[in-house]
Every structure is written in structure tokens, then in C-alpha cells.
Image 1 (cartoon, rainbow, N blue to C red):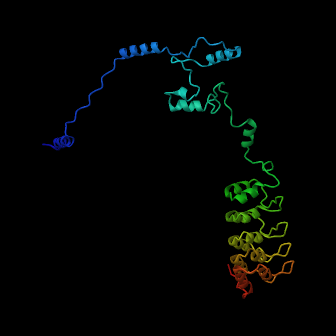
Image 2: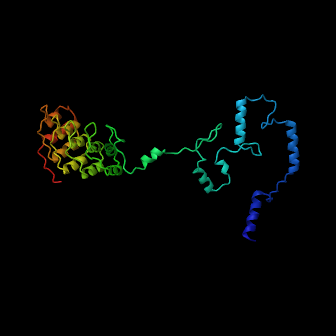
Image 3: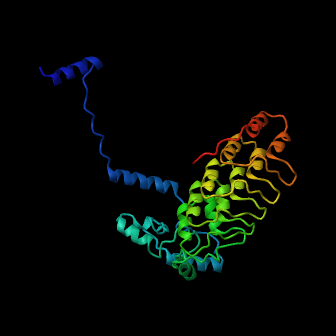
Length: 312
């Protein structure tokens, strides 16, 4: 006895009866079905909607529109009009046929309406737009406002490759916007280290001042960017240069209460004895900030021994 016979016996013992083969369903007599359908339809007397009778005549304008639509759309044998969606008209077509239709002027996505003919295909660009796009050199004078310069916008957003491309079209890297700021000011404010290095390597002025006399180190201290301060010091920017109000970067660092920035400026040689126009030293300014934990830390840094200037 084989394993197959044993499985059959086990299956019969499990279910208690032999498995019977499924009987084939009886075939339907189509003639009998059609006769039955015709009999039922004659009893129901369905309303024919293709050509309704006993309806009031339509106005002359609607009659003309109906004639035009009947000429435009062919009626198939089932009583339906041809599909308006061109994709449905390609039933059974190949991928090449569908691709040709989509790239032809007959197919206009979103322009097929129920009561109108499909409009002609619209082009994406006009002739004037194509002529502007085909120019190799951008017209930056037209794409610029007094507030938003392309160079400043790209520097603030950190778009390195676009900034590199725009500088190849005779753009002044030290151009000033209406607020008196350069592109490197925007890069420092937005803490874009790669853009700052790129602008400095491409002859950006590291000694520039804004209308208030603040240097780039003032902006770096304002954003608490120690890396930017180190980069600017590599280009010999004066760390003790004050603005129009006599505030040095150390004054600004004490006001922001950033102990790490104060410590970095002192290590790099910031003078703690310089006074602003109000006659305040950084230590005096620190005392005016009130009773706070960071105040004690700042006082320890400002009253300590002069820290050795690092070689790097």
C-alpha cells in the first residue's frame, strides 16, 4: 500500500464519508432564457429612453444643439454615445498608441466638459516665454528688487551651487542692498559656514561695516557662532573694533550672556578695558545685568588673569 492510498483512507476516516466529485452545473438553454426574458419584458412594458414619445417639443435653440451633438458623437449599437475620454477610446490599443495620443494635440487633460467640445491643446510656454528661457545669460537686473537681491537671497538660503553659478555672470560679490548689507552679512546671520568660506575665498570683503559701524564679528557674536568668529580671525579682522556706539564684540557677547563666546573672545585677544560711549566696560555692563548665575560666570572670566592668546 502506497502513501497516497494511506492518505485517502485517513481522509475518509476523518470525515466519515468518501469524497464525491463535484457535479457539473447543468447548461442553460439560451433559447428558453431568451423566450422567458421577452415574455417578462412584454409584461413590464419598459419605458424606452432613447427615443421617448409624447414629450413636449424642445425650444429651437435646444433642438439645434441636439442636432449638433448628434452629428459630433456617433451612437453605437447599445444606444450609448462614443466615450468622450480619449483614453477610453483606445481600448485594446498598445502603449505606443496611448503615448502618441498623449503627445498629440487631441488630448488636453482637464479640458473635456460634458456640454462642450474638447478645446484645442494649450501650450505650456508662449513664444516670448520660450525666448526668455532660451537665453544662456540671465537678466538679473529684471529679476531684482531693491530689497531682495539674488546674491543675498542665495547666500541666506545656503544654495551653494546656485550662488556659484550666479557669480559666473559678472555679479559684484560686494554689492550692497538697501539696508547696507552684503551677501556675507546674510550668510553670517543665517550661520551658513560653507557660504561664508566660499565668499571669503572669492574676494568678499571681511572688513566691511554696516551703516551702524558693526563688523562681521559683531554679527557672528550676535548669532553665537564660534566657528564664524574663528574663520574671520583667520582673515585678520580686528577683534576690538567698535561700532558707532563704541560697543566692541566683547560688549555684545556680555550682553547676550554667552560665556562660551566671551571666553573665546578673551582667548583670541579681546580687550576687556575698552569703554563704550556711555563709559561702560564689559565688566560694568555685566554688573548691570542683575543677579544671575551666568553673571557670576561672566565676572569670573572678566576679572580673571589675562588668558594666553592661542597660536591657532
